[in-house]
Image (tube, rainbow, N blue to C red; front, side):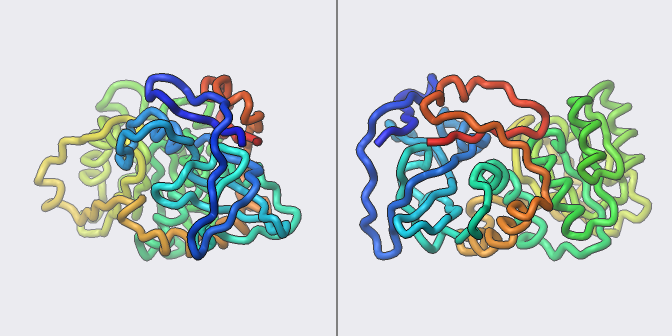
Length: 319
């Protein structure tokens, strides 16, 4: 079969011939891959920087995909731990990590949106008891996952959704996706802190795709601006696009009712994640969430790795 193959963490994958995988486990089956999303999680695995990377090469990138069984069943699936990735003409599916998609579902849309949408969907439905009427701030709302998080928070009943990011074009787009307000994280730090505290000081939940300096700046700004510091604020760390570390002053944990947690592999069981997939897949398939894929042939994977995308767009590779 043909696949995208990583032989060096210093260069993009190349389109090569690679031995086809075999379905050997009790729950395994071989599928023809129809569409694979080029997610940030896929890029970090391909360059060896993801926290789950063990440095083994060669590897096939890809953490999920849409595929079709020999019987014609359409599946969305998440690759098994330690299995070959999904950027290939064929992949092995563990049925326990797959959901059946209705006939007529657009494989490209599902491949584009399930991974980025899953992060906020699982965080709000599994990591916390989020109730309709709550308010949500999305840090890093101008990224693909952040834009979906704005939509998902609104879809799950948030009464107020605020998006924060740097790109002015993408910030403008957020209001059409359901954001009540947007906050620019660009500019003087004191001005940014004032904007954050003024617009989002009393939110119930922060979904954070940034971490690093923006979070280090935003956390005290929100907590000191709260009208009632005993009111719970849940900060859910999902991504680290702006840095791996922050300095967290101890007084913040004493002076306000702050709960800090993560959401991702390990903090949520595989079974817990898979349990949320059917409902998210239905929302994507129904068109309830705006998706903007950029389909490209898998044979052009090297070019796809460097292809710029428009706001809210996600590259999807087609074997």
